[in-house]
Length: 329
Image 1 (cartoon, one colour):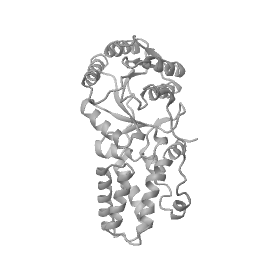
Image 2 (cartoon, rainbow, N blue to C red; image 1 turned 30 degrees about the vertical axis):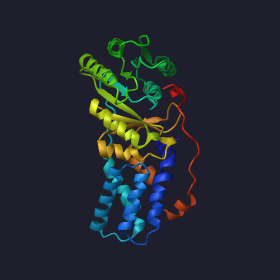
Image 3 (tube, one colour; image 1 turned 180 degrees about the horizontal axis):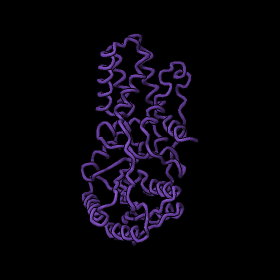
C-alpha cells in the first residue's frame, strides 16, 4: 500500500464522521445563508475540530464566498478544502542534519511513546542509520523492558540504568555512547508526564539542560506524542506541554482508529506546532512523515460528490485500533 493510500485509509473514520456530515449539511441547502454557516460550524465543533478553528474556518468561508460572489452551495466543500490547506501551511520535516541528531520523545502515558520510538528505530535503521536509544523512563514499571523489546526488534542500541535511576544520568550516558559509537540518531524516551506533576516537569527540564550542555551543536527535536483518539483533550495536552517544553513537533498516533482526525488542523491552527509524524496503523512501518497536502487531499477527496456521500453513508469501519505494547502504560 502506498503512502497516500495509507493516509486515506487511516482517515476513513474522520472522513465518514466529519467531512461527510459537513457535505450532508451543504447538500440540504439550495442557497447560501447564515443558517448554513451555523450548521457547518456546529458540525465542525461536534467533530472535534475545536471551537476556535471551526469559527475561523467559517469566518474565512464567509469572506471568500463574498469576495468571489459564490451563490451555489455545491461549491462550498471545495472552498473549505482550500481554506484548510492554507491553514496547514508548509510542512516542516524533522531536523536530522547532524551526527548524532537528538530526538527527545515526551507525552503522557498511553499516548504511544514506546511504540512510536520502536517504529522510528525501525524506519531509521532501514534507511541505513545507526540509532541509540536512551531508556530514560525510569519511573514506570516495565518501561525499560518494553523499550528493550522494541529496540532489539528494530536493531537499535539501548542505554539503560536500573529502574528508579536518575533519568538525566541515562540521557548523559546515552549522549556519550552515541558520540563514541558514531551514531546517526539518539532517541531519548521519557516518563509519561502529566501537566500537574511539577516534579516530572522539572525532570524534563533537567534532561533538556543535559542535552543542551552535552550535545549543544547537535540538531535537536522535542516531539510530543499525542493520542488522536482523545480528540480535543490531545490539543489541551499540547497547549500545556508547550508551556514547559520547547516542542518542535507533534507525533499523532492512532489516527486510523478515530473519527477525530480534525484535531490535526486544530493543533496547527491554534498552537502553531507542526505535526511531523502520524501513525496510521498497527504495523511497524505505519508511522510516517506527515504530509499536509496528502492529509487534506485524503480528507476531502470526492467530498463534493453528493452521490458518493449518500452511497457511503454509515459505511465506516468497525475496526478499533489497539496498542498492545502500550497496555501497561
